[in-house]
Length: 618
Image 1: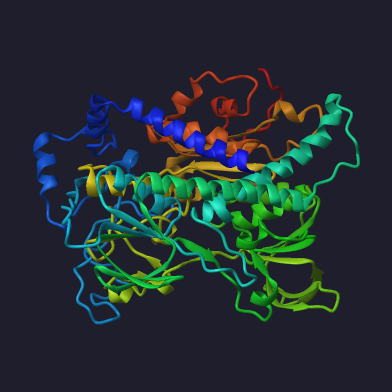
Image 2: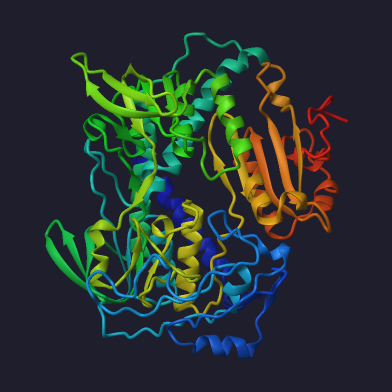
């Protein structure tokens, strides 16, 4: 354990030294200048003129609303949660869901901003904050020690700001808690990927026999050892994070913060309450899993916050919810030898391309994971033997049934952690359990910002929070003009057969441009590594959603198969750079790989031809 921690700290120190050597004074000047970009109507970057830069540096703290027509089709694409109605603009002023006065009766500045499409976003002047040293305890206080908050805090310190970061984790109903780093490090991406990898290794061991390895049939996983290994890694990351904050002079405060007034926080610490003032605040508190409002849900169920440190084998598990968290957990539990069942209220992978989502579900059913469709839980009761009796109802037929499970895992969505912040004391408005922000992550209060999963209508992904937090700090303290672009964010669902995508789903493309303006290129394929162990290739599939006429710009790429995240990451950069179908078809693939299947796409859905390949090499 100590060697692992030493290696982690050594790695961080080495990277920091190399970064310092690389960033010479001239390099820093070039890097700073490279941040000043805008987008024209075709979404192509061009440098600002010096006059525009000067105007932005001395702009007022509240953005002035403008009326902006949408750019051409090549630039109209926005994030999946954004406005999909071409030709329509959002009304000026605050969102109609909110009033002009906070719950406390405080008058707050008007929340005026256009829709954050690329053209409108880059025509807005960037706010510049002039640090008022001495008037407040800190220039910046970040509330939340997750990925977005930490990236913002460390970047702000690097540019001379005095920064404190508050972080506090409330234990789950069964008592699970964790250290600094947020959801991703402790109960999200990292432990999920490690358990997914453990599941894949189990499959690989059994497939090895077909490749000539002598494998003992008695090989089986050790849940407690797996959990211990995962938790040891997480604790090493917690430790390195604390050391990194100390080295970078970010004051870490392990306390629950709530607003007293727009510039004052009260932090509840173990040693008592502490009052903290700051010129600027960034809210990055993220979210936590929801529990259904049914008998026994909280008392006997667990969530992903508990699963990765569970001190017993999960056994036969009911996973309630068919979003990416539910499907990922069901997938690795099956690979580890347990018996998951997925309960689906409506559709699988809401918000994703539904053809791909249904293929993911079908591939999981093929592996022996049952799905209870159109079903909702009614109650959870603990039996005398310790097992859980779950009653549930089919929403279409009204039929009520029940089954007994060892574990019930709730994966029905997440809620933003706004309750403890007392946002009304600062005049910050919320929408449901999230915070609405404009193109610069600003709330309706000009000096209070929000990044990450707590903001309304943006992708809830760690890399999104990290980049948004970093860019925000640069705008505040490094004279940068670069804003976060939430469009075309790539993501991966780590199910047994992985699904990755970037850009628009087929449904959203049709909704945005019309069915007659969309061409879908698609094809099934056969991964070479699947041949010898005779693994199923039935659901290995790729498709490109593109413009039908003109230069055939690609609007979305979708991939179902092995190592999906590694495949789609490079294509994401190409798509954001204006990838077209002719460019894709004229790209020479690397053979034999699964990524090359995108370069072999030639059959369209409209043609009606069979997309199943006859050969892998011609």
